[in-house]
Length: 170
Image (cartoon, rainbow, N blue to C red; front, top):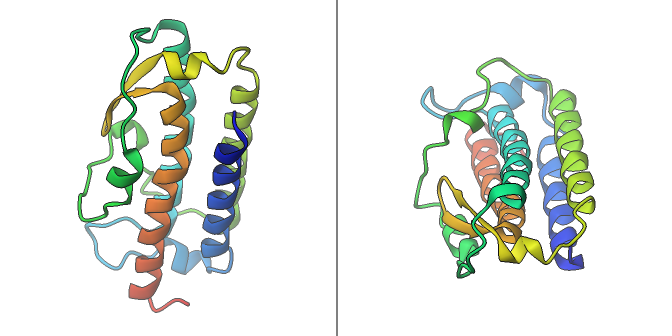
């Protein structure tokens, strides 16, 4: 894995933790409206996406399409928050409340598993040679599945900032 991707993963996760670390559990689980997610649910969704990404890349390495596929501007798609996506059921967060520390531990665990998995790939060039269909972004080379983890997280950090604003949390 190249250094900039690793740095982006680290920096984005650090930003996320800074946004949530000082919240009370009540703030963390509060919803500004009944149709939206709480900050806790947004974070749980991020854990589930990271876990699903490992499965998708693993599947792609074993059975993915070997035909070269054009890289996409996923950064533009994921940063455009005017476009809303419905989360696939596999990454829908729990409705049960979470403690802030509990989610931080889940985030740390899922990131550790992702990095361990990626460090175990013998030939990283295969990540650019194989692809798997992403539920929202279409066919992606496997290395872009890694990129979407931090880009997706950045998108949701902005959502968390908005939720904090609506909850009058600084």
